[in-house]
Length: 231
Image (cartoon, rainbow, N blue to C red):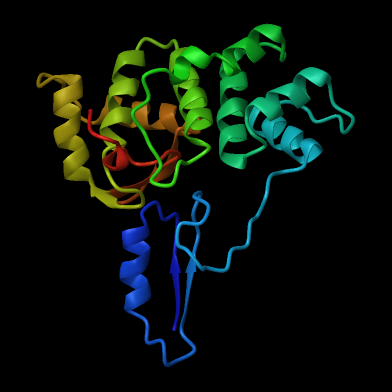
């Protein structure tokens, strides 16, 4: 048996599946995670970060800007550095640049490196996740930079979905109930605004998923808040 456990955050979960395998056989457990040494004495293969020019290409693609090829501007290289050369964070930065509506400049870099956006974070990695501050900074900066009239509702939806496990299907009835809470009970077409908020989060790369037939499946780009340390 080849068992693949994707995006694990807790060692107990990994151990649970590891014990389910028969050690007398050639069965193997493959774990993908953002946490180094999630288990002791385990063979690790680190994927590493994107090369600077590849990171620039991804950010430009997400932002919908033309890629004229390397070498790129120093500002672009700096933006990629502030995104940690991580595909997930580069996608958020690219979406922010698309919303920014201007060419990449010092003001946009200041938005990316706004340390106050990560203040007050409650998220903690069980093994001291080094990427928590970077993720929180970009996620909060992206939410701050969203200035549409439905900003409050989009933020509320993001935080509501963040308490749920990743990749868990949600029936449309759940969304309809949620829409009554966020949209108010007197809407003629419940769920219509909610769909637009979901679309906004997807466009910001803060939500990975799609609206399917009868249910939706979300993949938040951040650690689920059920891993948050109680205050």
